[in-house]
Amino acid sequence: MTVDYLGIVKTLEAAEVLFLRRMQKISCTSYIENWEVLNRAGTKRQLMKVILKMQLGFLGHVVRRQGFENWCLPGKLDGI
Image (cartoon, rainbow, N blue to C red; front, side, top):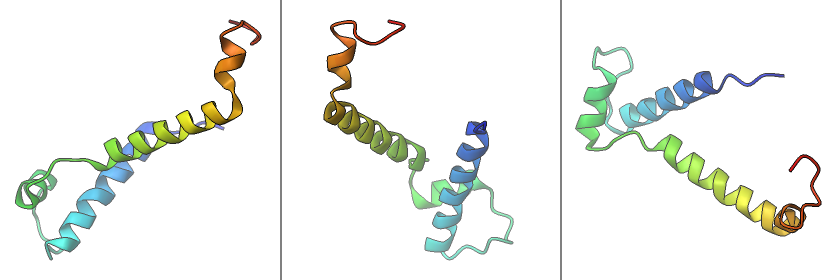
């Protein structure tokens, strides 16, 4: 199973602009480019940054909970 990371990023960025269009009551069929929608909202793309921050926080939680660092430090993990 392969993951198309760039496809996922593009889809999330498109969804972010779609949400901004809905909040600003801009029709999806009107010809207003995405950068213009972002300018009108006075924001930058933030969704991917928020998702990445939350994923890294969750990963840190899981790693600390399962004691993964205790395996790595003494060299008990194969391949290290």
